Image (cartoon, rainbow, N blue to C red; front, side, top):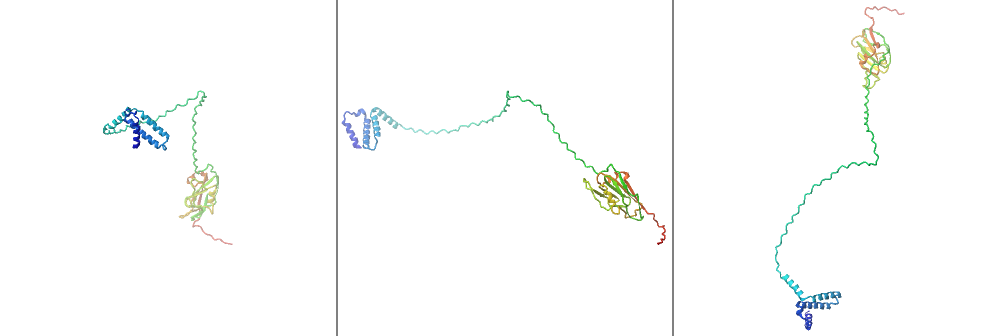
Length: 309
């Protein structure tokens, strides 16, 4: 590199017309440096493309035409900047960043939905004819049908009967038991026989049969083995019972029955019933009394001989 620089200096000194003072020292230095660069390019011409060489030559040509005063001004400016004293300015603390106040959100008022006006009927549409106001019709409330109260058994109006009963019965004055003879009774409706004794006890050869309340019965017997006997049945069934066997029995455990009597009342009913209140609802003409008369026997009677043939 030294050899190359000396070669350039020799060439410059050879040309006497080149005034180094005219161009200035720095211009000569730049020209020398450019020559070194050109020599480097020449050596490496095989590696560097022609385009790069042309660019470098253009730069050198531009530098060579610059006046020496311009280069001196540039250098003086650079030296002044470098030699300028550096003032140690204390770092300024950055002001604290105060967050801006966030305004409180204003309460939002929900839009009130205004009632929309009713649609105006179209003028061209036919007007609807007003129908007379419908008179509210009262729905008839169904009247509850009263449940018919069942009619209790009672004596019917027709009390006509055909009764055949003896008025008296002859009995042993010492007898404590008597059987009444057969009786005949024909009536309409259901028959109730009410028998009573002034001294004895009545026995119709049947036990008491109680009826069911609210349900029609076919046979009711009340007062068996007592002085008051009531027998009621469908049709003439009661008359059949007092005639069963040897007949209704009248007996006493304390004394003889002679001189006593038995009363019989016959009542036609709407339904079978042995209610004692119904015994007085019959017709008086249907009442019979059987007297128990003792035979005319005493100790003064004389026994006679009887011859047998």
